[in-house]
Length: 248
Image (cartoon, rainbow, N blue to C red; front, top):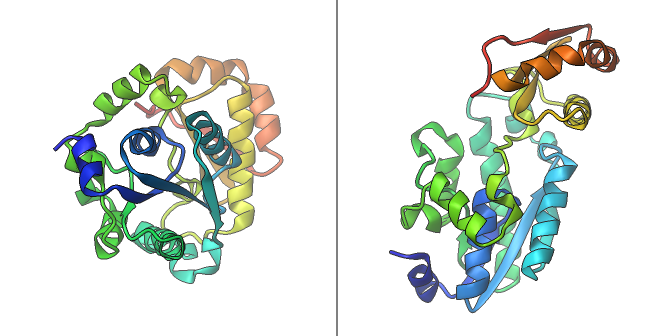
């Protein structure tokens, strides 16, 4: 099946929109092929502000409206206690909110951007999508991440080479309580590292310590800025560590 055929079968759709590579391309095609489409962005403490900024920017470029739903996931102990299946509870809560709002707006079909490269066996949140009958057109049409990036580039979408960015909660070890304070600290220090020109990295919150993970090509930049990085992060952590097992 091709995406154009999918939208012939489902001409009125709601899209869970994050502003990432996949959901952006899905929205782009939906705008061209569907009769009616509405995008929904769920803002929680788990998403940094720049993700929302990107989503609003690309939506503006596509000439489409995004409805922003605000959700306090930290209040849910099943999520904030950070169990192994936290993603299931979080994804379920997010898509329940989208489906509820979409139904009020007259949409019965909700889509997400899961693609054919995603290992759904390793994603607890996939179970929630199935339970809520959320459809993943990119996956159904066999589109891989590499193909979506190339198609996005051909379409002139600035997201074509956007790096994957998992939610801020993934920086906190399983079993450690998630709080808004910890999330804001992580967002602050990662924004600082972005300001230094770093891109493919994560700051892991390990109790009182921060562990920086970067790609091999960016270790030199970390070393060059070592003193300023330590000074910045020591405002929040007692120790600043560099993981030598580099990110791919």
